[in-house]
Image 1: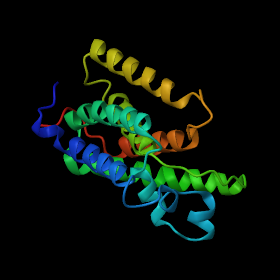
Image 2: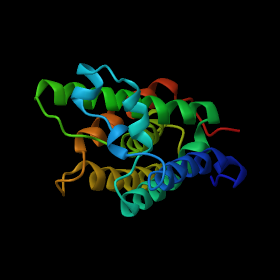
Image 3: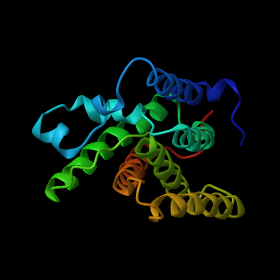
Length: 192
């Protein structure tokens, strides 16, 4: 089932916000003042950094790859979920994933700073997979296999560590929260 351009507007809005924040970073603020770490979140109690860091990106490559992923996953998820669930999944996965990431880093005494929309995007991936698993008996088997294979490959690429600058804890926690939330709010059948 294809999603119309009109239905993609929520994804375009998030892409636009991420892009505007990236451009403003050259003129209006210092990224370091908005990124999150275990210390800034839990010791300084600057909880807002979990949300602000979701819209920051290290460089143009980071932004472009995240926005391509966001566009693709948004199109899929907006086929099955209404707009309010889409936004709920995006923000809840990013925020819960960010707090989980910071909590583990606090326990490890790791003061690594984190930024990027990856946790929220991985939450959308997890929710997509949850939808297909939960509705597997209502989906044509060939479509189910094809979609789960595509999503599984995307998950493997983004969850298996391959570089030192990627915050894999953010990816993993965003994915896990998105998957759990997707199981909770999935309904059977495609949205009308």
